[in-house]
Image 1 (cartoon, rainbow, N blue to C red):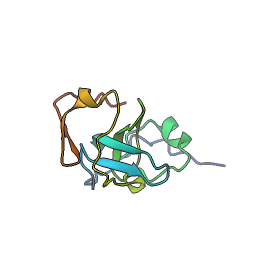
Image 2: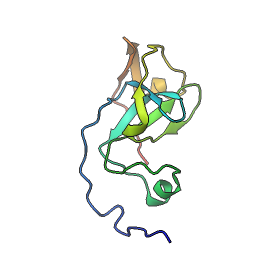
Image 3: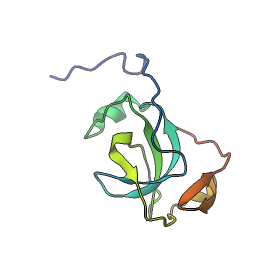
Image 4: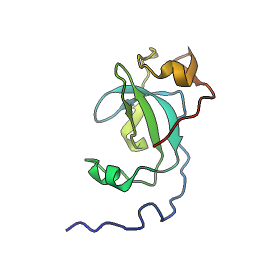
Length: 119
């Protein structure tokens, strides 16, 4: 039987300092997709139902990233341990790039002031 922490979103988790920054192009270690980080949470802020439905359930007490996935209209929410820098240096194709970024230079996107809606 699985024991669920009923204080899932009540228990305070510390915000961790992220390795990656908004605008970095990353690659998912397990699934191989490329994407650009559009927003960062210092710890997992997902709904418990979403988290427990996640196959891998990485630790919640690490940075989690909102990532626009290259060649799709998808946005994912991976944990830091599942990401690595993508060194290809090529821009991405995603319909929301122009909404949240105003430039691409030296293999990195420049974030504008448009707020990320979150969950």
